[in-house]
Image 1 (cartoon, rainbow over the protein chains, first blue to last red):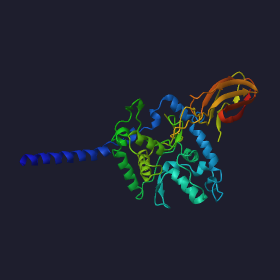
Image 2: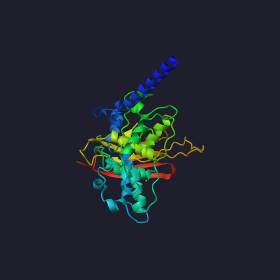
Image 3: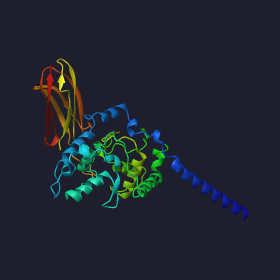
Image 4: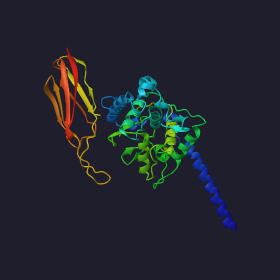
Length: 266
Length: 106
């Protein structure tokens, strides 16, 4: 009886220690601000050169398409984006650096793609663009391009805070058949190798970006779905609130880093 | 939408070697892939690129299925006279795009 009791006590103490250890490691594992690196810095010289030159960066093809769409009328109102917002180079400057943001109309945080579609359905009275469609990627890339070189700074207020915390929890929660959390690779093992590839820190500094593996432009959510499939978890659908929460956490985590849209990644 | 981006100097000295870069939006579908239902996706690639300088062909390329989407071609030529460079891409399903740029040679 006494021995049993002792075993039980040891078990409780061990569990408590493990829990405390977990709780501490959650915060201890976050990368110090000064040590954060964009995925750009993990790439080879050739891929960096490809991103830096507007003629060799294939993402520019989408940005140019986005500029056309910006000035094209759509929907029942016959309005173009430019009709209300004018020249995107001034009106959209810095916008992508502060998204996801709180949307008063829907009472929840939304990302840049959802903002564009809210404008389409609400103001232009047009059909929303499908996630990952060429047009939505092009418009998003064009809007985000106007913030290139600007520092990421999303507004964390009382309304956004619960989403930020939920996103942080998702980032630290083990999931999938491989039972891995984002943090295990991107906080604890960045700079090391996963197969032949260097593990980056997972800062969303260049989305939507041109990924050589995709042979095309893709959104942050497409990248997140890739990662989830990689750990054999069931990916959330495009536009899921869980993804927006994760985007908020990732953008908060990358605060102060410079936007590179449209970036090029291997 | 068919779209290409060109880069070449607007001005050059006579005899100068100039670099020309071209980037074109194209899926370059290989013809070897299948849909999720097993249907083959037909080949759709750019097969030929030609650059002419005041009508004279200065660079030509044949493209094949192994070439990545949105092909980037960079090459050099000698600036001999002021005039127009014409760039023409053609390929499967009647694909054709022509762009041009002018250069002033001093």
